[in-house]
Length: 93
Image 1 (cartoon, rainbow, N blue to C red):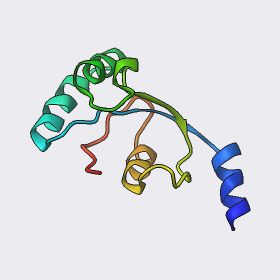
Image 2 (tube, rainbow, N blue to C red):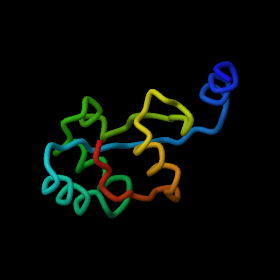
Image 3 (cartoon, rainbow, N blue to C red):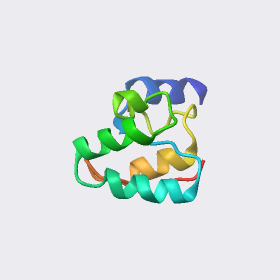
Image 4 (spheres, rainbow, N blue to C red):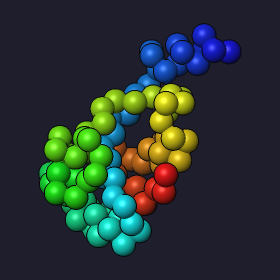
């Protein structure tokens, strides 16, 4: 089972993900409003607001596997439900 998981994580489908990390629900709601409107809007919002180390890079985490347990399940679920270019609802981690 561990080998199969490792193969899925390494060789399976991947999703390019951007995140904005903030401290409060109010900040999350504001960040979501600012992030809607395309990739440029999201990248600007992440650079201006995100506490995550990826903020200066527009929130770009990179391609991730939805099977990778290194990422929180709530995040993987939200990413899996999105259409390309979509912005998820706020995900509490």
